Each structure stands twice: as C-alpha cells, then as structure tokens.
Length: 122
Length: 122
DNA sequence: TCTGGCTATGTTCGATTGAATATAACGACT
DNA sequence: AGTCGTTATATTCAATCGAACATAGCCAGA
Image (cartoon, rainbow over all chains, first blue to last red; front, side, top):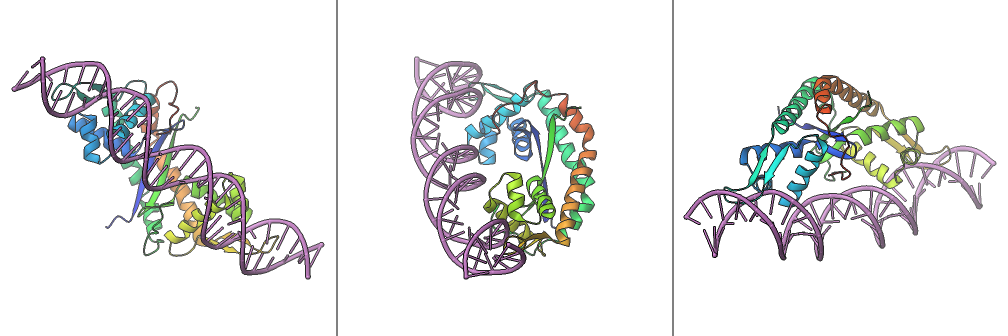
C-alpha cells in the first residue's frame, strides 16, 4: 500500500486553528525536547512561528497546553501540561478514528485518481 | 448545541488539495447553477479563482469532474460529470462518517475550550 | 449582425504570510 | 561575574495568494 491520498484534519475554533497536523507535531516535539526553540529547529521552522502557534493553541483552550520558562542552558525551556497531553491524545485519536471510518471512501477515491498529481497546490 | 468547534477535512494528492470544503461547495454550486461564473458569484469569489480550483480538481482525477463549454446566454456553461457527482458524494460521506466517528473526542475537546476564540487565524 | 454572458488565460496589485534579524530579559551553570 | 541558550517580542523583507482588471474566443438568441 503506497498511501497515495492523504487525509488531513483541522479543528477550527472561530477563525483560528485550535489544532491540526502541524500544531500536533509541534506539541509532540516540545514534549520530547522540552523546548520551543529545539522543536522549531527539528521541524525546520523559525522560533517565532513556533511560538505563535503555541500562543494561539494556548489561547484556544481554557488552560495552557504549553508552559514556558525563560533562561537557557538547563534553566528555562517549555513543558507540555496535562491539558496539552490530553489535547494531543484526543487529536491523535481523531486522526485514527476518522481514518478508519473513511477507509472505504478513500479507497474509492484512490481508484479514480489521475496518474500524476498537479504541480500547483491550489 | 451551538456547534463551537468545526472539523474540516482536506484530501491531498501530492501537494495539491484534491478536494476539501471549498472545492466541494463549488462543485455543488456548479451542479446547481450550470456555470462556473454563476457558482463563483454565489460564493463571492472571483471567476478566475473558481476556474483554477476546477482546473486542479480536473487534473487530480483521471476523468474531469466538470466539463465546460464556451459561449454565454444559454449557449455555454459548465456541467458536473458522473465522476464529479461520485467524488462529491464520496466527500460528503467522508465528512459525515468522520463526524460521527470522532463525535466523542470533539465533545471532550469542546469541554476544554477557552471562553472566546483568539482573533488571529494562525 | 450584433449583443450578452460565459470560458479561458494573462497581468497587475494589495494583503497576508513566513523568514530573517534584532533586542531584551532571564536563569542555571562554570 | 560571565556565558549560554532560552523565552518573548518588534521590525524588516521576500514570497505567496487572492482580487481586480484586461482580453480573446465562443455560442445562442434577438
């Protein structure tokens, strides 16, 4: 199975993306690395962008998903909160449940595809 | 139930969005109105943008989802093909199946939300 | 034949987005 | 005390995106 079509899900809260594939991955890297900037480096994005994503995530929920402390070299850093773990786990479940639920339809769509995808990402 | 969180799904084929909420709605309006430009007007988007969306949709699949003929005032226009109907129906089923499958998780997420969504759409 | 409205495509411009850069404050460790 | 790496934020710049405008070809009906 070569995984031709990919299903991506975003969860919107008002005009903001409360969580989606990018924020989930970022959350996971922060949990593993204990730092926003390290997670940003690992994902090849700027620290500023990562910080903005964390900020909107935190604003979307009643309790912050990531708590950060200033100071480097063992001092500061960022940690994911219990609420953050919960949200991440829920999102992973949403991905998985959804994938299983639409398996049949995705297979039918894959049978209708062109030989090659278009270049433009519109 | 006021529907606070919204789940949106995109289906990617390579770098292109084969179908998503916007393309599905466009497809539906084209089917109803028999014209790309009329559908674009109804959705408040430029004809050019609508045409580009149709173009990438057509490029993503082996058979075109929309067939168009030049000429106005009863002459030309656009119609959705059988494949187009099929893709649209499959996408609607994907939306619905997925919504049902993640109902529990969405409810849990809604219970964790902030009182008001952030302004920035990051 | 002329007109209206549609497809199809190019071009220009403004807004939005993200990257890059620059600071400032901070905390732990040497 | 000084250094390092981090958070937090502002600013500048490049790229991308979409809207607006322009143009050409086409077809049906008046």
